[in-house]
Image (cartoon, rainbow, N blue to C red; front, top):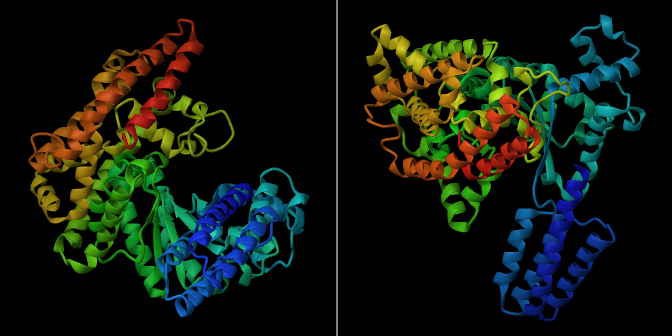
Length: 589
């Protein structure tokens, strides 16, 4: 983290230094030239002599030059200084903002080791409350070098934040995200670790961000934040942070954990609850959505998603994750970037400017979505409980090869042991593996079953009314359709006769067929994505690129499963086609 922050710091200072050379050639006026020369020397010293320079100082020099230029030289070429000033205001001395992120279970492991060694308390006989009491009251200051392994790394990372903020400014690193948050202790453990690393409470210039991502975490969100808001020490911390609380919601892991419909509905309700509890405590809540690009990772059409949220969800700011490989396609040139930023902006404004009854759910609509979500969750949970679920992904998909390609943004699974458990699977390789199979299970499984259940009860007219009356539900349906349109089961037809996995494959295929027919019946479409010809064509073009590669990949996987020799060569073939598929498919799930 320290090295990355330094690299960003020096990169932007070098850019300022080079840009200033060109500026000085144009602005050679008396007075202005001297100020810019001084700034040039200061930037040089900051880059090569490791002297500190702040954004404020650079801007003060530019303002000084502007004043002389305006008063003594008729403001000639003032636009050049203005352009330079804009860049400094945007990029500061940090270039890009870093976040620190760690799993709550790792934090607890670290805290337990510290308490065991430094508190004199008996770990076997103390409660969570006892641990937190010690953590929030102790005056102990730790040296990371007194520990080893993950405890040393975690403490050192927290100590480094101070020096990173001194060089790169607070904008350079101002969020500490806690994965798998589902209890108050998950946030307070981090708050306490800052104190253990020698920070006074006034010096904790960082937002502590819980990430609610599992079904349990989302359910607990309201209770956790209520307790935190009412805790004096944490409340004072929030006051110092401008009475604002950022909360991250894990769409990707939520979808993996609860299935498409349940996860999206759970997140919607959680947002409403967190908005209400934050408003009651005069806290401005900012939602940071961990949405993947495709529907199977909780993503889909971003503008439609945000525009469909009603006034019950806080709209102070839009923050969301963008997959690395999609940044180029979405923000890669000025026109694309402008269009997509405008889409985000207008989605946020739309709810306030254009009042629309379709954005606000009635009690009856809520009950119906809840019912559908529960039915689909049960169906998806039954699938996860199948003994063949994880083995199917391990043996029949590319799951095992994601880690070997070394191109992921994070490890392919949590934990260091060899046994693969469902809860340890990371969302990206999980969804990616379904995508490579062209089955996209997380984007539809259980949805069609839920629709069919209500149809069997003679209540399909209610669902049709919901589709027509709710923008939120309509967006969910259309996104799921997109996910199904990117599926292609003929690629894996050979699996239906597999002795070990044939019945499992048939469960997936039957649900796909059911979901497709139910959604076509619900929407009145003759084909998936009927009203989106451009997107449909885009998917079709992409499939022509991807399917040959996927066929080669499936051939190699079949050879590996039969173990006919040359395993190493076939595994290379799987991985080489994996590179191409990831790049060509982008948001393929």
